[in-house]
Amino acid sequence: MPWPTHTVTNQVPELLDYNLFTTDAALADGLQQAGGGWHAEQLARLGGELGSADILQLGALANRHPPELHTHDRVGNRIDSVEFHPSWHRLLGLLRREGLHVLPFSSPRPGAQVARAAGYFLHAQVESGSLCPTTMTFASIPVLANEPALFARLRDKLFSLEHDPRDLPLSQKKSILIGMGMTEKQGGSDVRSNATAAVPVRGEGRGAEYALTGHKWFFSAPMCDAHLVLARTDRGLSCFFVPRWRDDGTKNSILIQRLKDKLGNQSNSSSEVEFQEALGVMVGEEGRGIPTIIEMANFTRLDCVIGSAGLMRQAFVQAAHHARHRSAFGRLLAGQPLMRNVLADLALESEAATLLMLKLASAFDAPDEPLLRAWRRIVTPAAKFWICKRAVAFAGECMEVWGGNGYVETGPMARMYREAPVNSIWEGSGNVMCLDVLRALERDPEGALLLLADLREAAAGHPALLALLDGLRRDMQAAAEEREALARRFVQRLVLAAQAALMLRHAPRAIAEAFVASRLDADGGRVYGTMGTPALQERILDRAWPR
Image (tube, rainbow, N blue to C red; front, side, top):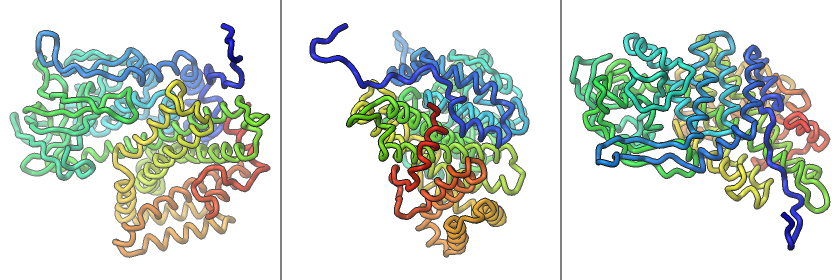
């Protein structure tokens, strides 16, 4: 309709109907280099589907209509049910169809972890909340596979590619989702302070049934069909498989007290629950609950890195698209030198994050190879610290490219900015990750030396990077208390060295050199847009977001 006051001009068209995979050279190249190229055709199909207007709208709807808790039915029966918008189930159906909850386990082959990581990375650009139950189900499989009798009952339902949203006993479901319940009010990350008690009711030890009484302060995705839970027996913290329903068809006594009112990740339900003699089957050895569930945490931490890298990619794409369509002071934003510097800097950060998450996924593909084991054990927590933390500032910078239009909820930037902090907090916040890096170095000193030698090989001919690696080696020999106090400094430098090495090995040479020069430049700091390579910036942007 005509407006009497003005004509609408210089507004950016919504970014719709594009292919998330084929427009991402860093992802496509990295997939081939990391051994997952056999999955490229399927990822190209998925990338086109995820970039469609219909699927992008699902992400917005799922977050605009958050889940609702119904503790009782209309006549007063306790039901503890969480209702989701239909968009949530469509997104979970997409994730399930692509096997992102199971691919490396159901179809093991070289590069399977990398192929799955690339698909997860694409989905993270559309909607993050639906990744939570997908990640936990994926991470639970290696743990449950160690329990032959239990796994025999669950395998087909875990491996199913069909999403089944019905709230029914396990035996009646076509597919199932698995969640986690670790933290309690008094402890948070300090799960050793957990007080939930487990009392044997049928047998004792591994595979026996226990009654759990206590609470969980963060019970992720309470509508999952079962959860892996930490509870305390006479021999210490143990891990338990706790289903929503008992085998006799009655509800297990897991009472959802409330859903968390969260900053972001609003499509996903996070809850507080109480167990009132809830049935649980012991998984792993009694008193070894933390080592048992830590195997699950290793995979969830990898997914935090992948999810944050995906969020960074989408934030950059939205910023670049905006800058190529929005004019200010007489010319397009993307044509202005300072904005071009910011965008090129963001593009480098995104590509380095993408390469790092693919490298870590490839390390999970080869768990027994000594060098890749060092990447997995040492660099995974380091990357979770750095990439997830960088994603927060990164999303804020991309929102700033949009100006005031980025700060309102009608566009995508505000949701991405609210989403960014969750991966930095979930599965262990920054200090926990840095301390885990130190522990990994202490447990595998030979692996640490292999890792530094690997990075040094890539750094040949780069004095600043070689000096950084020399400094890391000296820091590893410092006294224990000093190492802990400076852990964040050490981990930051370790990740930058790893990213620089990966860029030098896999990115176009000039672009890799730009990354190394900018990240090791003390004058640059950590503010985007301080690069000193104006001649390269257009090339960097054309690679990152083709015109």
